[in-house]
Image (cartoon, rainbow, N blue to C red; front, side, top):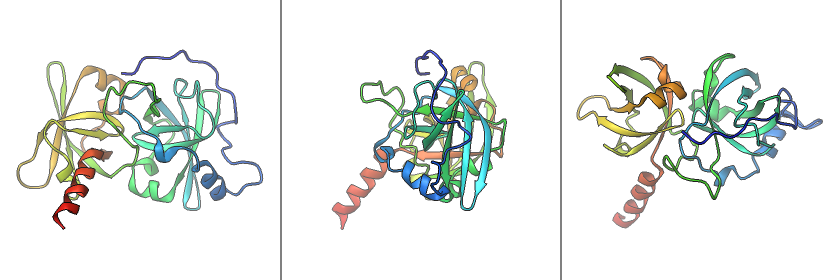
Length: 241
């Protein structure tokens, strides 16, 4: 995993109050989204297992508060943090916690809407320009969700089989990269008939330090397929027209 950084108390806005005084809920979210999120990338190397403090729904949005002392150590309003693979903009920090507004589209197309207080989540700060890319390029734009189908324990690792939506199956290739709940993984197996699925082999480090260590069959996970595969498909489509 990524190198540890010293924890320190984070200043700034109390995590329970992400909205700017006098600014409506939705308007505050739009304001927060005007940062550098469009240009933000992650590596899929989870820095910390955070804990959900609250998910407060308001209209077609929600305010998510998460405890994560490491990722909030140097976080400020407007920064990007991936939560289970979903890129969100920090709207407030304080006491080792941070808050973020989650729009309805994100709640609908990811697993964030089902989070509950006390649940663990994978956290990763956006990669710095001078940082190392230890995983693969992850945008934090979830392509879909799918259930875990099975887990097969091994001597030193565990093979996890995950369903994949048919419209995403063509982007998943053997020995290629895929992000599952924000974790950069290498595809170690693929279905060759029937409903599509893929397998990943999880080492002890991943099992111990990410939520994939305890995702049971039937649990929904966020999927982001390889960005390069989508670009290649679009380029080839243009040439064939």
